[in-house]
Length: 318
Image (cartoon, rainbow, N blue to C red; front, side, top):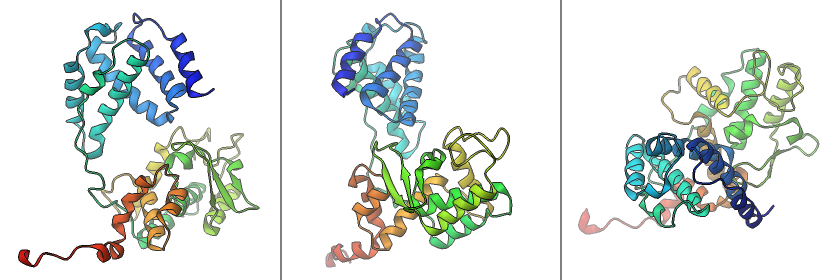
């Protein structure tokens, strides 16, 4: 079903304004899925902030959209953003803006109210991306090998993060059918960028996966590669488990107080590719970036290239 057809179908199925807040939230989530095509984690984030907004606006009763005013929107977003830090400050506003556009789409409110959502200051690429030096990456990856099935699993997970730059969510959902042992490739199903990509299977990654599958993975009907180490040996519920594995492995070798542990390996992989001579297009293809603007954050790490284009310091300022 294309977007136009999905939009028409949703408009026909939309419930009257008298429904309670919980049903309104479900309809909004359905809209994000069928019309907007957003990834599950993005939808979950949007619905979290919208549920908080509805709790304040109507106490989870049936909303009276005719009473919704700009000050309701502005006050809520400013209050929630003030509790957050850095880039996360923009998330509540983004979610509420999407919700107001949805309400306009289904005819509950008039267009224009989304302009009341204040935009949080955000300086793009204001900081260098955090990453681990190659020596630290190897210390972390090697530090989990303790001779146990759990160690074999964690070693394979960390190698995937470090060598391929996969997202934690992509690692948690990796299936046996995604590995082409003959061609030596890994197929990453479409997730955040909605496009499938195929990556080379490095020799050490393949060896780690084989070791885990043969000697560490418990019997299970699921085709998901990585399983919990305790009964009932199910796949991980979400990417949080991958992040915990990365965090604990870093703590084990004395690397502390680093944000986004699993994503740190992604930054480290991109940094290594850049310094190895890879182009931004090549890095974007490996990481699955939909836009080169996203990959552009790593340009600041190529200090040698930046030094060649830097302007000389004015003599008068010396």
